Image 1 (tube, rainbow, N blue to C red):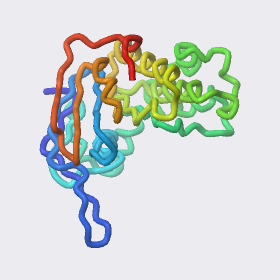
Image 2: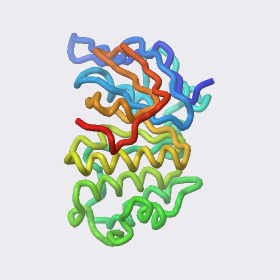
Image 3: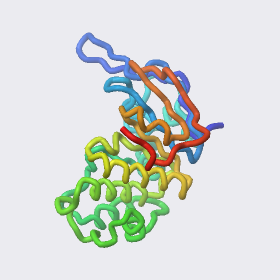
Image 4: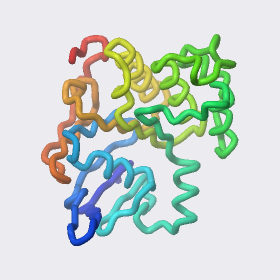
Length: 233
């Protein structure tokens, strides 16, 4: 059994009389400890898949299993526990609490975890040991994103989900964030799933899932991922 399994997953949204199929029979598997990219243009269904993976939305049909757990059959209360303990989220626009320091933002996540990691050690690991007492407004975009990664890792999650984590960053800073995510995957064994529209990042991933119009159109396994430093886009 693979760590993540999507089996004929459908998700439909209705606006008035119009029904939009955002996930149209999606099938894929991701192994534990892989760095996986889900690639596609806007409207391809990437965010829908990420929301389903994270338990933020539920599918209409099909099966979703994470570490053997049938996510699509969990009760609302069980989904809350799943999001709280098993999943870490890294968003494009950071979603830090503005009136808390970097350290306090990370501590907030550690307080709801069963086996949290040290917020101080995580902030040092992401290179922010001198910025722990700064508020988000005093940090650059790249620094704020590093805080958000430390916050996600503080929960010691089995699965790290990243929604366009470099989309709001410049080229140089974006590379730094990708290196950090890739290193986290390799050093901790955390399964990392990144959604992006940037297909140029594919060479760095262990697995690349390409989506279009709610469907998976290609799955590629990369036996020799390229270091982030060698990527150009």
